Amino acid sequence: MISILTGDIVNSRERTPEQWMPILKEVFEHYGAEPTEWEIYRGDSFQIEIPIEKALETAFLIKATVKQCKPLDVRIAIGIGKKTYTSKKITESNGDAFERSGECFENLKKQNIAIKSPSKEFDITINLMLRLALLTFNDWKPAYSSIVKTAIENPKKTQEQLAKLLGKTQSTVSEGLKRSGYEEMSQLISYYISYIKTI
Image 1 (cartoon, rainbow, N blue to C red):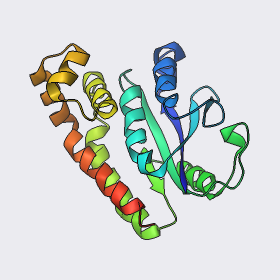
Image 2 (image 1 turned 30 degrees about the vertical axis):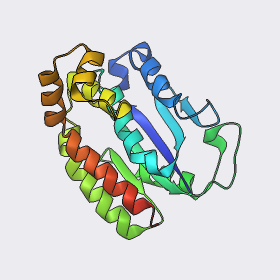
Image 3 (image 1 turned 180 degrees about the horizontal axis):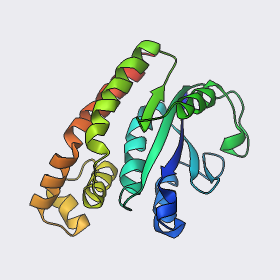
């Protein structure tokens, strides 16, 4: 089982690609090689293969990365399943993980991050939780997004260490994590990881 994230950049015409493309590619490069494991296509759309336990965290990391460039945001559909055909380009590979990701993406409307897995029961629960979480996450300001991104990428670092990395005070980092709902996001990721193992 793998996960396929299909997404695009919201309001991409408001910024030049040079402002968001390099930082997005930097995130993708941690997960594999282009274009086998990830690809940016049609200017502002992307697809990336991620181990299933990392899928939700990666979606939030992508969101935090892109939202550093106001007024940009992302839509991401996470499809979970099997990969039955591997091509040199991820956009030409196939399997039900790809099909679920594509179907999920087509149905993204008001909710800009959603999951489609082999379990309908899980999908109903996790997507309701995501809808509630996104009431906070969709309002991340660039400064909060930067703090969230750094915290996700450095999970073992203390707030003081994160503050040094960001060139901010510890109190600013603490306030940013609190206002962005970082603790709740971490709990949601933990729930997702524990449940996905049972599917």
